[in-house]
Length: 289
Image 1 (cartoon, rainbow, N blue to C red):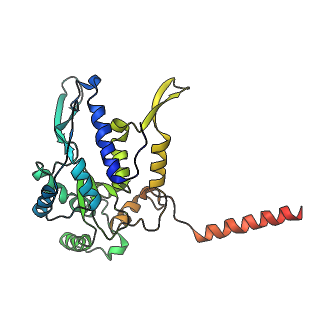
Image 2: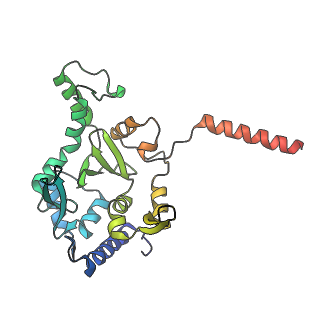
Image 3: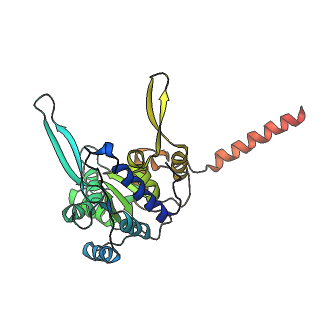
């Protein structure tokens, strides 16, 4: 794997070239992706899509759509429906990243997915989800729906990019991450579109891992290259401007710390003062010696 470009446009072309070379490998002839190629969109097509679905793509999303967008074929996913010898083998076909020219039904369904998924948890009768910041929970189911819908209106727009991954599409935010949303079980899948792509397809198609031999098990396992690991670690460093209105609180619901938010813990002034005090005492003792 060559150096991963920092410039986003160069990065997208690197993704295109690297992945297409991977898919063109003759050892890959039996795979659905053999000789697959990305199908970028024109500026006119992007504008028509925005009008059709009443959405606005961010600059980085537009660049992604122009250079990559989706593949010239569907991805084939195989799985077994049931157990035992009589279990049926199922093959499903799905777009490798949203196809904005063909996936109309899926797109319309996905645009409403985040709201519906969180609402499902909000209305759960056994363990209803509700945040204190939303005020007192209404008593009736219909009132809960109404209040939650009003709260959700103030959340940043989310645009589907692949499966249940959504790009935060708010130009007022410094960081516009990709979220992986399954109801209130939501995580940051990449704080930038660049790091999201590396997290999503890097290991399989971009060569961001290398085989490392495990002496104890006598097997090779894939581990991120030093370059990919540094990009990942830098992406999840704490930054006070890494905030996502509405979703931030949901992401943190499963963990009172910041690890589930994909960030290092924010600086704690009290703990920092204790560290300084301890350091001063140690230095003072050393001086006395």
